[in-house]
Length: 148
Image: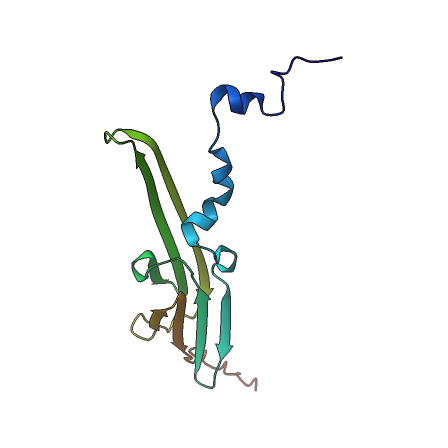
């Protein structure tokens, strides 16, 4: 059966002018840059008296990153928002896009670790943390009662 030429593969694209929805596929790349595939890759290195943690956060600024220590868990979260507005020559809005993304990871570091113990720096898209090792409190030894 032959169909009229208006029934092409992209009928609805032409009919409703859906030209820019392909850009949604690249949303992560727009938010996080060309290294989006490396987000939050984490290396943990154990030293004699501390742990060194490196977290890749390409495309983020220092202000986008938050560290929280709660009940022995260190949570690293990062969020980013981006607006892309386009206006015509008269200043009227012809297109407006908003992108938003967030991610987080948590690590158990122990109840003895305080916020002052954790040292953090952010340089070239890499969050570096130094977390000291602290001994867990030892439980008192059980005393055995001798039966006479």
